[in-house]
Length: 581
Image (cartoon, rainbow, N blue to C red; front, top):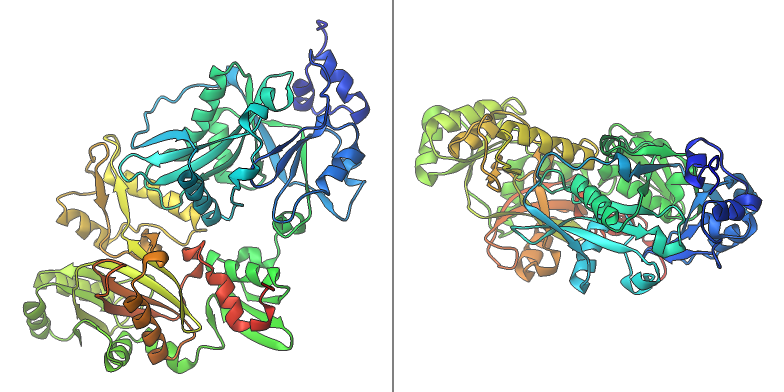
């Protein structure tokens, strides 16, 4: 190579993309023979089309238009995107993502040791199933491993992060060796499909997956790692900046399709919705149903289709009567209706004077205090065993409703069953918020870090409050906010399992006992409500024993993905919009 010559990547970093006509010649100048044929690597969800291996813009545009239904192809390293877009401006668009590069000469290993999980390659059918469950939960396309370009032909490798205690998959990433894939003269590689379970309590999973990929490819003699990140993904960009990535002046092009619609249409008014309203609006858009945004901050919108018009606030609609809504909001009425329907409910009474409250406590020994009309777990305290705790919890609950209930406490798992159109659509066990010690950080710091991850994953809908209930839970375990947990020690920091206070979900729809499903449908019919989330205490999801706790007229359907809650919700409202089988 001549002394004055610069590499293709250096030109991109300087904002000097070469033309298609000269690109192959410049690749040869940089020390490599031009590619013999256009390169398209299948990643299981679509193909990566390597832009500079195509003879001209028309050839690249034509290949993008050959995208298969349900897949997402990406043309990357496109030096002159305007020339490609000009071939099919109605069908192609410029991806609004930034390409970042980490030169391995700039990489610095981590100074902190992350423990509690291991990184390994995906290889079994069980691995692919777990990765797909994660990707679907994060709104990403699943992988069909049968479509993957074989590794010996330059295909990708998927890695997963596995919790050492539970064996559960908590993260995944894809890596591509460019030297094998398209004889890259600069010996590069790239990272794709990084995802971390939003309910993961292990710190640093995403960072470790990126570092693992970097160090793996460094050991293979490669020189840099590229990745694509949406321009407004601040959380991801913060991590990549910390690791030393720099912006690369190159572009990616995609085909307009339903999967990519938010990218080429841009954020509409519904972008301001919380996740619980957004999932329903997006499903309506997919069906061709008109959406009118009434109040994005309140989650209110109106759906219109075929002469039918339905107003919604998240999953609460015109189909729910005021009576049914009142029966759910007033927990004493919920209790009475379900009891009269022959369903199992806890003992309950209205909080009164201290002596009456003590008498209830003496009878049941362990009680729950909750506001009569409350939501999102606010003001709820469980497993109270002393009169002082009960009185303190009553005062806290009165901040949300002057009317407060006492209930008998029942040991077990917190089970949420979603019933839509009097059919069970999803079931999940809700676990209280917990943190895992690392031997370095205090419980307070772990809670704050966990809350940041939960808020980022749920659009600000979930966090662990540092309130009296959290403090009471810690004190009962013999800890406080300043305690440093041992490496790997798990600690529940809340008694209630509400998702808004940092709880997590474990989908149990497939194993739900038939008697539990039947009881949930009976409860929905007793309340005469078309969409409802029912909370039960159970010894196990696959056993018939239960006690109903409460009913929620506005349940968070987004929490139960990949179960088809949004699909069944729109089916209920607009049955004629169902896709043809």
